[in-house]
Amino acid sequence: MAVGTRVLPKKLFIKTYGCQMNVYDSARMADVLAPLGYERTDLPEGADMVILNSCHIREKAAEKIYSEVGRLRPLKSARRAAGGDMIIAVAGCVAQAEGAEIMRRAPAVDMVFGPQTYHRLPEMVARAARAGTRDAGPREGGPGRGVLETDFPVEAKFDHLPDAAAPQGVSAFLAVQEGCDKFCSFCVVPYTRGAEYSRPAADVVAEAARIVAQGAREITLLGQNVNAYHGAGPDGREWGLGRLLRRLAEIDGLDRLRYTTSHPSDMDDDLIAAHGEVEALMPYLHLPVQSGADSVLAAMNRNYTADEYRRLAERLRAARPDLALASDFIVGFPGETEADFAATLALVEDVGFAQAYSFKYSPRPGTPGAARAGQVDEAVKADRLARLQAALEAGQRAFNDAMVGRVLPVLFDGPGKRAGQLAGRSPYMQAVHAEADAALLGAIHPVQIVAGHANSLSGRVLAPAAGAPDMPAVVAPAPDAGVRA
Image (tube, rainbow, N blue to C red; front, side):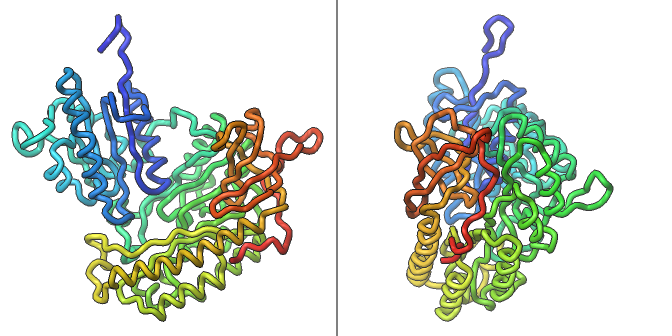
């Protein structure tokens, strides 16, 4: 529709499931579609295009997509009845793994495409518009009317994406690596995201500079296995993640750096040293261990032992004494015994985690773990998960309680739950709420912690030092503050 010669914008709704990499990808899809006139909206009602950006990590991931398509189908029918249209698309890892089945089972879906094909969206939209797929029944004209793009293209996706159009805010994501070559036996990522690929360092630095120019003060580097980053450096040498972090820390106005998600086998000496040497690198590291039992780790193809993980944690804390560790755990992997589970609880006690995510094992079709003998009973998995989460939650609460009385630099990034309140993040990724003037949004400001909670901290805003409206990126904790459970 046009008014005079001006084309009215089209509405784009994207629902994102899963990891931060998907959040980043959703933003980039919006950037790709912006030249076609699409503007993001917060609701699917009235949208010209809906994209479900899926994640295959969680249990029943595909079923959640089908349920969402079912809710969208009446909206699409209503749009058609009113003379309009709604393109429904499924993107992400579920699309990559089950694309043909989605097209067969959900005829309301017009487009299915994998994570490596987002730069081809304009072409796919044009094909979907020409195809004129219907809401129900067989696709008119027989098979092939829907758009299915799940091949891994020869060209690198990052080389064909436009510059980010919209600011992400004071905290931003930046993908530097994707794919994974580890082939953990429980994980679909190597099959849905492909082989490891690292962006050239100059491209990363240029994008980071643009993000900071748009107002970001904190950047989190993303990748399926981000510390496996090995990108071409502008000096003609290969750069690891430690070297890249050091260069990014030189960007004026970039006060905080983080990265996720990591694999213990790729924590090299330079990256460990960077945690003690790069002031902007926050003292919080998400380092998934998955299990504390060597037999389970071997079955998972993790390629390290529990004691090797313990020693790695010690090395990291030697480099940065105030470092807080977070992790991931899977309980009930095939063959896990009660003794194996006890070893996991022992590792939790030994290492101490400020935060952790824990899940019951659920088979992913096509992964080696799904075919393993010794599948654990659901009731046993549920019991173990409850016991593990109790231990992890106790550690997280103890870590938060240890902050009481401390002064932390908080990056305020949004309103709090109550009037007159702002919310932000501590260097340790804790949510912090405090009564504060809205003028502090986007600032790093000193906050004295007055209470610790299960998942957040409450604080009191302090007056900054004269002539220093912002605090330094981090204030080191007292030696006895404790990062262990």
